Image (cartoon, rainbow, N blue to C red; front, side):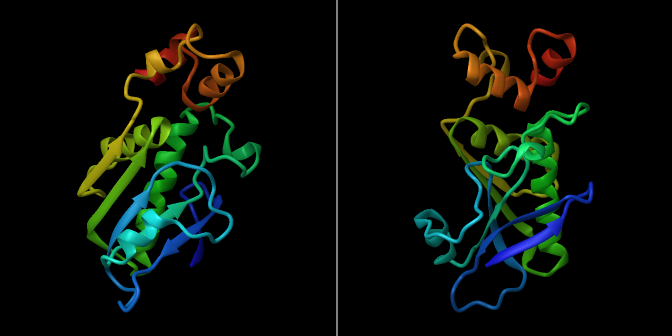
Length: 178
């Protein structure tokens, strides 16, 4: 089911909720999927379906930093990196789902698979420990100063990493990465 809500900055965000079959859509245990490509179309996702079949509401939010949503969704906003804006967007999605009665606030988990998605899940728990009961990540990047290393990335990937995470060549950017 497609949904829309406004984040704390008034930006309209969207996403998809996979509901468990045969359960009333109210106060459900919820799994948030961090990162990945945008979910602008309904499509079959075996992972989402696996958790929904066990009674979980699975939420995929088109947060900032996801590909295919336009320049404002990948542009650094200055005071917080795009990755931390994505953390805010995910927290706002959890709060929205609780407010509309879909999610049990005491049963929220987050999953991140791979580099940025795993890091995003970890940052969500770090920045909002009151929202999440657990997180599971694999293949995650955790040392951002090594991840955004000009000598390890081709120029295009380096530029994208700087936009999303911070510039290690400036004191401000290095502070964001740490």
